[in-house]
Amino acid sequence: MNPRLSDDDVRKVARLSKLAVADADLDRERTRLEAVLGYVERLRELDLEGVEPMPRASEEPARLREDTPGEALKGDTLATLAPDVFEHHPDGFGTDAGDETDLPADPPTERFIRVPKVLGEGGA
Amino acid sequence: MSLPTPPARSDSARAIADAVRSGETTAADTVAAALGRIDDTNPRLNAFIDIFHQRASEQAKAIDTRVASGEGKNLPLAGVPIALKDNICLGWGRTTCASRMLEDYRSPFTATAAQRLINAGAIVVGKANLDEFAMGASGEHSVFGASKNPWDESRTCGGSSSGSACAVAAGLVPIALGSDTGGSIRQPASHTGTVGFKPTYGRVSRWGLVAFASSLDQIGPFATSVDDAALVYAIIAGTDPNDLTSSARSVDDQGDPLATTDAAAPDSQPLRIGVPRFAQSGGNHPAVDGALKAATAALANAGAEIVEVDLPHADHAIAAYYLIAPAEASSNLARFDGVRYGHRAESPADLEDLFVRSRTEGFGPEVRRRIMLGTHILSSGYYDAYYLTALKARRLIAGDYTRLLEGEDDASRCDALLMPPAPGPAFKLGDKLDDPLALYLEDIYTAGVSLAGLPAITIPAITSEVDGVTLPTGVQLVGAHWQEAKLLRLARVLEQSLPA
Image (cartoon, rainbow over all chains, first blue to last red; front, top):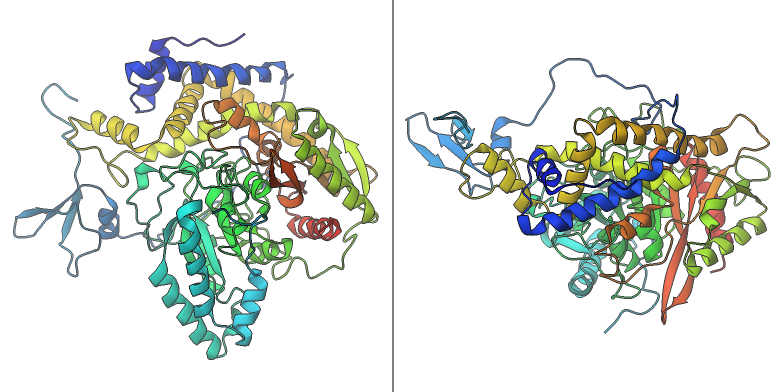
């Protein structure tokens, strides 16, 4: 039995993946997904009754670390990684910092990662 | 102009470090020579994404200063030029994963495995090319273009650690780090005539390795000899407080896993090597059968007992792997959202548009395909039928290996399994690009070993004429969990027993 996917199935999985598939590519992507899903059908030949799933490659017991504060990357460092950053200076004037590659010598007190409006008229 | 066949080799890492430490040469000269080779060759081979001329030269001088002040004995890799697969974070330069998504990403920290090599005196001369996010078996899924095989530039180096294999095979560096999820070290090693070693899952810290499939990913070395692979392994192995999936068990062979033995029969007498029947089932290229035959004969000559063994579920490994790895990838790669780091789409209309366009523009077609496959099989209504089924199959597939390698019965237990790393030698660029399943089947002899988490090493076995060119073909030795030292000793026995 080879699994068949509809164009809507492909659109749905793209949406869940936060990816876009152009209408012109739907056929190709559907065919490729079906090819892999068809190939893996051979797993149905196995008798898996009573077999424990094996989610990890290791039988080592999981290690947990003490729940104590440790060093982490600083907020300013993280802000330099973000592709769109807004700097808020204490005097109230903001500047764009999107092109910064190095931390300024005297970092401003507040840096924010910019995102499109989340709340608004009618919702996103 | 094409390179001589076989390509020229670098001096071994051990020889370079010895020469730097004894003052016979300097790290500065060694690194300058490596950079010169890279500048000459890289425009053709495309092994490197970025080359660190200035930084590497400065660090080499710093090593020379430390050697001059008597610190050489603490630097087992003094002045050794190395390459890092570009999914391994480094605190300078870019870490791109060969993806548009991370084209401008600069990691704020250095991966533990890389830092340990740097602490040992190694000099990172550049970041090596790869299939985007380590997804591929040919190096062709790189936004920077494929690496070309130094043995025949019309062929791939295999993948996904294509650039690491290429750099070592072409003599640009003696050692490089790669990562192996379903064969990404062992298959390119076979295709380029290098040694490629994947330690036991959990043996080497993955802190700073960009995650692909977290229940499978492992960092390991490429080298020109088992000796150099062991040297690198001993430095990078061991627990890391930053990676709780790194094993807490001690590495009792740390230092020199090869030191404890003479040539043959390290742990039992005689050695028993299992050759799985499924690895000889008729689907292999003649070069692969030739390599297996040569290795079998070499081990028999060295006194090993060769036995045919069965891996009853091995035929299902690719199916289980191509459900589990994409499922984990779809989850791991959800972090790329255009907000915190990585590619961000211009002028997004809203948050959803920002996510979708950033990801669609940032990821290449194979990565997008695997994310969609993984998302599909994890989605409501399919999870049990696909993901859970694959995890159960994984138990059976892994059980085949552990029964043979770790079973209670002394009379039937094997010291190692001998099998091919891939069903054929290096293939032509473009040959498998439009047939993803054909490319997935490159992993047929490596994916099951990864699902079981076992250590395995590829070593070059033969060179042979393929379509008018000379190509190398390797063999893979698979060992028991945590028994890297024994596996490396066995690999050296095989290396020394093969005809030169």
